[in-house]
Amino acid sequence: MHARSLLVAAALAALTAAAPAAAQDKTLRVGTFLAPQGVWHGPLAHLIETVNAKDVGLTLELVADPSSVSPFQLGNAVQGGVVDMAYISGAFYTALVPESDANKLFNIPVQELRENGAMELLDEIHRERMGAVFLGKLGDGIQYHLYSSKPLESTDLSGWNMRGTPLYRPFLEALGANVVQMQGSEVYPAMEGGVIEGYAWPLWGIGDLGLLEVTEHRVEPGFYNAEISVIMNENSWNGLTPEQQAALTEAMIETEAWFIDYRNEVDAAQRALQDEAGIEVITFSEEENAKMVQTADDAGWAVVIQNSPQYGERIKELTYR
Image 1 (cartoon, rainbow, N blue to C red):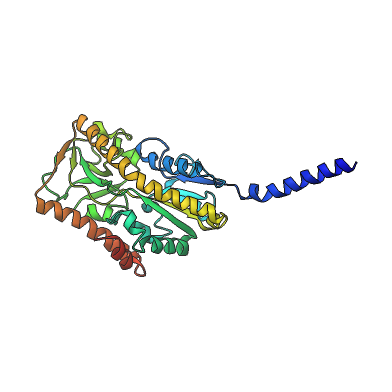
Image 2 (spheres, one colour):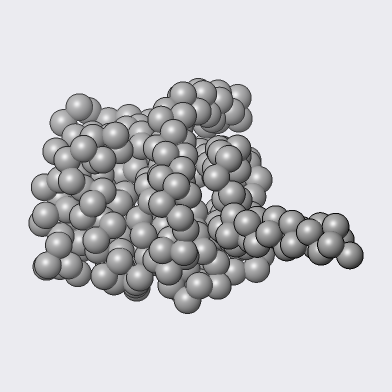
């Protein structure tokens, strides 16, 4: 009996010792605003793989995409704890954080934003506005472009029907276009049926939407950045151990650095894909090109500063030059 009691006591002690470690293991539920296929999923897949490879008892699991949670509701899902983390463009949660509309306008590399106080400011704003942590940002250098079914003679789009979203509506309207708002999935039939003559989209992904066959022209240069942010529910963040928080932050920074080579590879592949499809590049004079890009930036910042008099100017100071 004595020996058996000792064995039981030892087993209980082992279970008790193991319990705190097991309790610290965390699985974070991740949502994405994009379908988990194609070139845009690469950075999220890399982040998940990087975090899961770190031996800190932390796992990221993709549980939501547009088939289950609308991109426009994903920010709310983070705020409410339905998901712990989201891979999402700032344009999709401006109702919660108006300042997220500025993310597309940043032209300072993310590594520098981590050094000059910009990331701390963005994190502070997200915590204040929606109870979320701003973990990082991807998308540096991936620009939006104007695409069309007929040649553009200039950047004056008066009389043109262009598909738009709130992200670049002010810019298209500043060029004189009539902006028709629709989902990305609706662009193909709208172009095919002549409802619109053009649309704005990043360099990446028009092939994924089947738009190569209804697109004849791409305007260079591009404008804005096709940014994607990674945000996390603040309570979920606080539920991590300091070691897990450090590992998640480290993985985000590693993914931001990895993204540079990935972007360059995908940029080249996407340009080649459009070239092979016969899409003609249109460009204008140096002066008109510069004016177009500045018009885009001015229109974007005007909205940000109007909607965030508290933080708009400070964000611009730290993220744009």
